[in-house]
Length: 334
Image (cartoon, rainbow, N blue to C red; front, side, top):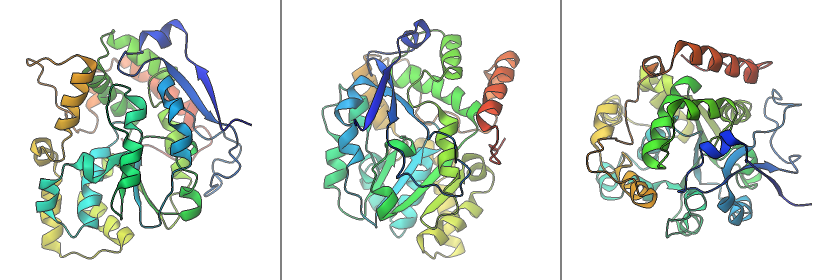
C-alpha cells in the first residue's frame, strides 16, 4: 500500500487561490495511521489532520516521513501564522544559554530550519531536508506539517516538541496578507477567505492540526502553548518553557529575554524577523516591489481580525470553527 494518498484540488475555487510560486495544490493523506500517538484519546474516532500542500511535495514526502530523528532534537510545530517565528526565537535562546551574540550572528532560518520549505517552493535552490540532516546537534527544526505527515520516528524517539496554537480568526487574517505578499496571491480577498472555509488553501485545515497536538499536551516531551498566552503573559510562558527544557535562569535574565521577544523588538531584529525569507519569496514569486512596506511580522495582535473581517464572515467562520471543535474540550483563546 502506498504511504500517502494525494487528492488534486481542481474546483474553480481551489484553482482561484493557487499561485505559480507553489504550483497546483493537493490534499495529502497518510494511509496507515495506526502508529500515530493516541495521547489523551480525545481524537479517537477522528481521522488525523490531512494537509493541503502542492504537487511538488510528493517528491519529498517519503524523505520527510523517514527522516532520522534524534532524542535531543527540538521541533517547533505550528499551523502557519500562529506565532512560529516568535516560538522559534524563544526556544532557541532558552536552549542555548541566552546567547544573544550568536543569535544575532546566525539568522534564525539557519538556527531553526523550516524542513519542508524546499518541498513547497520549487524555485528555491536548496534542499531544506538535506540541511536538517546536516545540522549540528542538538537540532532545532520548524514545521507546519500536521502530525500524520511528520517523521514517523517522532513518535518512537520522542524528542522535544513545542506546539503553538492561535485563534483561527486572527490566523486567517494574517495568512491572507502572508499569502499575498510572500506567495504572490493576487486574487480577491473574499475568494481567499471563502477558500479557507472549504480547506482549499496551503497548510489547511488548521483546527484538526491543532486538535491532534492538543491530545498530546500531557506527554512529557510536548509543550503546548497559545499565541494569546504569549502576548498577555509571556513571563509565565517563559517559566513553563524553562521547566520543559530543564533550564534555570534568573529573574533579570528572563526579563531581558521577555523584552527581546517583545513584538516591537522582534519586528526590527533582522536576524529573527524573517526579513531575509520575505526577500527570497518576493524574488521567487516575482512580486518584488520597493514601494511595498509589508513586513513578515506585521501586527502580532490578538483580535486584529475585527479590523479586517466582515461581521458576516466572522459569523460563518465561527460556525466553521464550532463544527470542527464539536466533541472536543479544546477552546482557542480569544
